[in-house]
Every structure is written in structure tokens, then in C-alpha cells.
Image (spheres, rainbow, N blue to C red):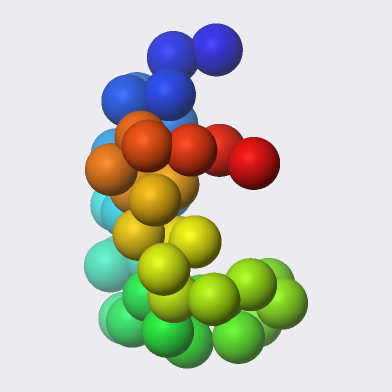
Length: 45
């Protein structure tokens, strides 16, 4: 799996839906820092 492509995809979908990283994190049960890590391809776990 290409982490960079996945992170860009997550960020694109989040923005299209008008969500902040914090709001997306709340919906998924993770922190906004976790969402940031996903989007910057630092971690997908």
C-alpha cells in the first residue's frame, strides 16, 4: 500500500466533505493528531 497516496486521498475526501482533522478524528474515534499522521503518511496505524 502506498502510504503517501492513501494520505492524500484521506485529506482530499475530508476537505471535500468540509471536515476538519479534529471533526474527522471525533467521528472515527481517534485524535486529530492521528488524522494528521495519516494525511502526511507518517503512520497508517
